[in-house]
Image 1 (tube, rainbow, N blue to C red):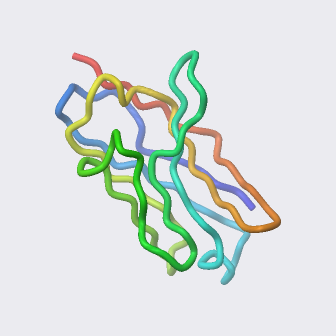
Image 2 (cartoon, one colour):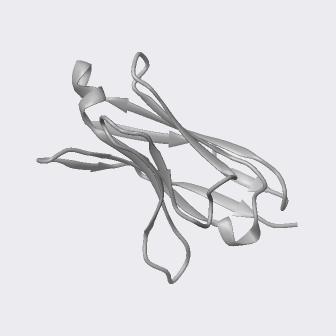
Length: 116
């Protein structure tokens, strides 16, 4: 299983970015996985940003609720994160995650920098 993130970059405060994660190797089992986005800022622990359980609604970290939206396209095996109203404190490396009861997969990460 491989996860490849894209869409990171430099954006001014208040701006928007859309991250995309392309998943390969799961085949039709993609819908069975919990999918999520995590982030890790310098000298901080990796933290959950947003997640969609295999049979549930999305849930978000309090810091991003109302600004970020996670979505999953089962037909394309992709997981996107729309980020609006970005703040400097959103600066971090963002990682895509795919998890089941027996497996836990991570992408290589994509840098998001929010700065004027």
